[in-house]
Image (tube, rainbow, N blue to C red; front, side):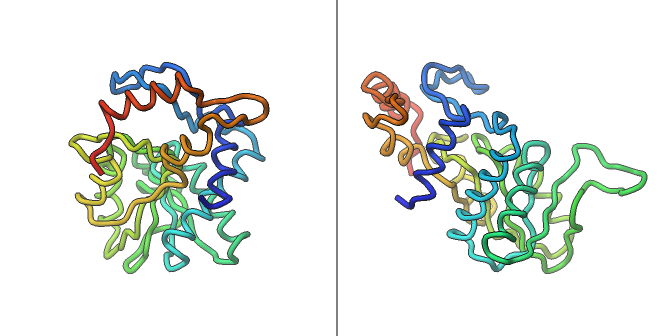
Length: 225
């Protein structure tokens, strides 16, 4: 596992973004873990988060794209942070863009904020986590309506590795449906491998009971891929 992935797992735990226990998800599923990107609230946290996204995007997609796009609302700070980090880490000026939930009809008008998207632009989408693909369903037509736009891929922070609408994961379903690549900074398999029975700052976050709960959860909800 790459060093930045190990650091990112520790970063999620330190930031209280990744928790273990018993949680009821929006889908109604009872999950032994919960990831809340809304817990990244400080300047230093957002700076680090942007760097992890930039490294993962660079590893997966290289530098041959023009715009980072973050679906409103959570995607807006993610996009800004990652764009800044990409410039600092790789010396490549990538523009950022996000959508508005409502079209603005005065001043800076339109459905988009940030850089305009034009014919020929290559776009990477970033999100916190994808469980159903609903935000892509909403933003894909917006991106395509801007002209001859190529969507290079999607990057999320955590691949939950559970079934979406069918037997495959939400990320695989997006890839199949829209035809672009998907990736994650880390997967839950990598999180489990790194934290299982290993003390971190004096605490074992994935002990035997949590590991048993994770195994049961994935036996019921795990994706086929």
